[in-house]
Length: 165
Image 1: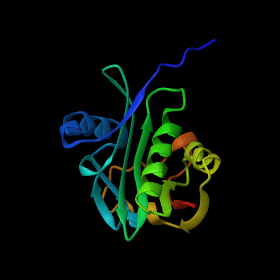
Image 2: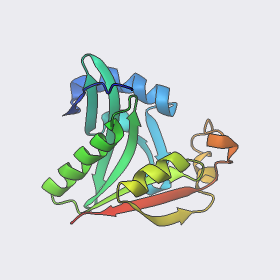
Image 3: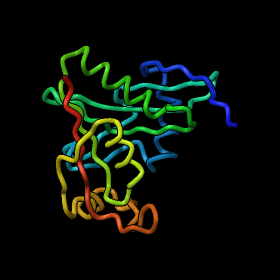
């Protein structure tokens, strides 16, 4: 039987940048996230979001931005089990509802079947397929690998949307 480490969620502050920056570099290869849906390059270390913490340890991180009344989930990482990713996503949805944002978008790549399962279970629906988008993104960020999870070639972006009531 496994035990779940208790954690707390809190909004990011500017004082968290020294913690957030190395996490983003470790998990995403850089603080800059490139996606056509984001309009190009976004520095995720400067965005609002949430930290999940267990004692002094960061067990999850989510960053997002709001443009034109739509929230774009930019990064999400759970470094522990126990529903950390779901709790972070829930915090974003709650914030959006409280501030009148009625739609949340997230973009992932065609190889990330784990993310596709996670988002669809959370209530997101597939809303766009951008064929060849990652090939275009590599022109800006050439370090994006050509092969992803399970040896699947990374070529396309899939957008998922959650409509909030």
